[in-house]
Length: 411
Ligand code: ATP
Ligand code: MG
Image 1 (cartoon, rainbow, N blue to C red):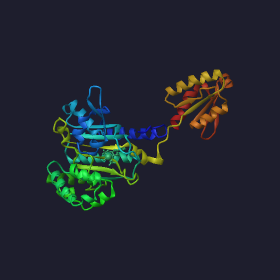
Image 2: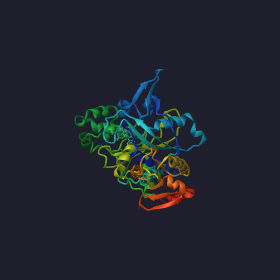
Image 3: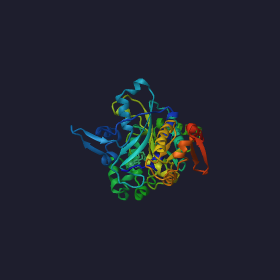
Image 4: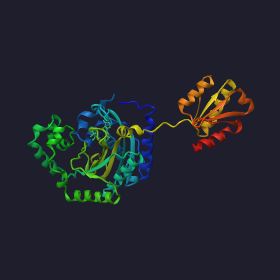
C-alpha cells in the first residue's frame, strides 16, 4: 500500500480530472460507493473459484459478526447500489463511473499493489453492440486525452451461458492431456475454472495452451453476430483493435464482449484497463434482468506509463517578499486579497533577509515577486520582479492587485 506524495499526486489529479471530463462527454455520471461491502456480494458476483475470491480478499468480521470485505473491484458495489436504489425505475439506461481505492492481497511488485486505484465506468440497460463500441470509444478517447499512446486494444468474446459451457468442455478436454505441463495453480484451475488457465502468466502454461481451442469457434449464433457487429461499429469509428481469442477475464460475471488495453511497457502487468459485458450479473444479484458493460483502469499503471512526462505542480503566481513588520502586515493582507482573486500567492512567514526570501521564491519557482519594504510603503510603490526575464519595475500599491491579476491571466 502506497503513499501518494506531492510531486506525483499532480499526475493523479490530472488523470482523475480527465476521467471526469471525458466520461461526462459521454453522459456518464459519477457514483460513490463505500469501500466496504458484505463479503457475500463479491462471492456471488466475482465467483467463488476466482483468484480474487479464493485468495485475494481482505475479509473480516465486524463486531456484530457480519463478514465484510474491502472491495477488490468496483462493478459489484456499483451494481449493488444500482439495485438498492432502484435506479432503473428512474431511467432505463444508467451510465455510471467511479474512482477510488480497491484492495487485493496480491504479491506486491511493479504495477501490482495491495491497495490500488481504479477508474471505472458501467453502462447499464442496453444490450445493443453499439453500446459496446461506445464504451470502447470512450476508453480510447480517455487514453488519447491523457496522452498515453503506447497501448493496444484487445477484444474477445467469452460467449454466454448458452455457449460457454461447450467451450469450457472443449478446453477441459484439451487440457486433460497436458496437465503435467501446467503449474500447480493451473492444475487447480483446470478443475475449478479452466478458462483461467489461458490467463496464467507462467511461461510453461502459456506454451501448453498455444494450440488450445478458440472460444470464437464455439460461439452461438447470437454471440457471434453480436461480436461481429461490435467490430463493424469499431471499424466505422476508426478504432483499431486486435482480436485476442486467448483473453479471458479473472471475474466470472463476464459474457460476450471482453477487452483489455494492453501495453508492453509494464512487464507482465500488461493490462492497463480491462472490462467486458456482464448481461446476467444484475439479475444474479437480485435486481432486474438488465444487461451491462463496463471497464476499470488501473491508475497506478496509468501513472507508471505517464512516467517521465508526469504532470508538474502549478507554480505560484506571485511571491511577496516583505522587509520589516509594517511591510510584513501589508504583504500578508495583500496575499489574502490576491488569493481571493484566484492567484496562487505565497510569502515567507518569518522575518528573513531579502536574499533568503528571494531564494525561497526561486525554490518555489514563483512567476513574479513583489518586494515591499519601509521605503516602498512610504512611497506607495512596490517593486515587481519578473522571475523569468529578471525585469524589475515599480508598481503602484493601489493598482497592484489588478496589475498582477492581468499579468497572471496571461501567464
Ligand atoms: P491482472 O491480469 O494484471 O492481474 P486483473 O485481470 O486482475 O489484472 P481487473 O480485475 O480486471 O484486473 O482490474 C482492472 C485493472 O485494474 C487492471 O487492468 C489493472 O490495470 C488494475 N489492477 C488490477 N489489480 C491490480 C493491483 N493489484 N495493483 C494495481 N493495479 C491493479
Ligand atoms: Mg489480477
